[in-house]
Image 1 (cartoon, one colour):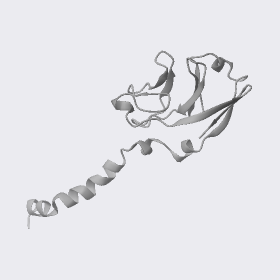
Image 2 (cartoon, helix red, strand yellow):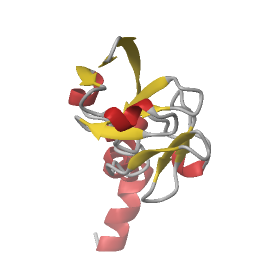
Image 3 (cartoon, helix red, strand yellow):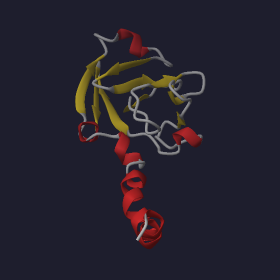
Image 4 (cartoon, helix red, strand yellow):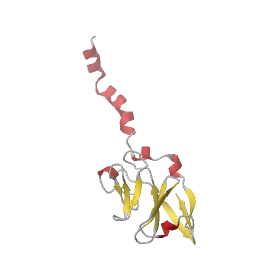
Length: 137
């Protein structure tokens, strides 16, 4: 049996077995690590006074914490689902999340707004008690 005959006998089954790991590796969950799923920390507004202004944001613990243009605190992972880069920022002009690496855009609730953002974005709960913000999953 020559190489061509051997490859033709392998057929579609072998192609499926060889390509399945590549296909599975390209899901939304692959960009998010277990550490990001379990989030619970405090942001002291006395330490991050600039965060009191609507449209501002900070990055701490690989999480983007923002004060949206309506004055509500929101939070999302810094890791983009498109390619897993830590490039997500809050865009005050669009009032949503943006990955500066490839232009992925996400609504404040994490829903993708364009093709690069179609994998969605992990967002977190934020509660305020005086000058303290609790960011948690």
